[in-house]
Image (cartoon, rainbow, N blue to C red):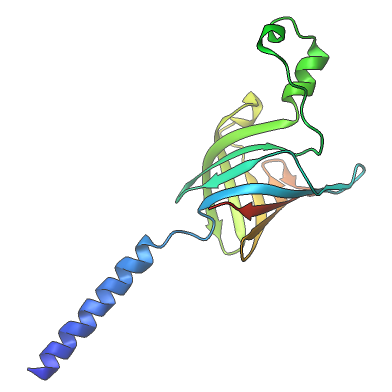
Length: 164
């Protein structure tokens, strides 16, 4: 009787542990704000106080809404949008990235695939981005490694701070 009770307790504990592990969210899951962006190459620079930006991760999907620059984007009043010059429109929209899609984590490598984006060219079924990932406490560091065109010659490093 005692052996049967012990076996039942062990089996119950194993089942509950398994369920708990399955429901535990990935360490990436949550809302992240852009804290720092480092560009390499010819125009190398560090933006230590970038404009507001947010990256969201769910179990299988992500959303990226960022502006990797130090200065605010040009604000166009609604009445000006229809008559704005090409230069004004570029100043308002080019610095802003907006895309969402799916992602996969393999070890310390993150691969994203866009489903929808501000930039129509990013919505290519063959397009992907590969990043190395480092998670330390509430800081997530992403370093570009490759995309559909091959390895990234001058990778950008994005540091994100956990919001929730």
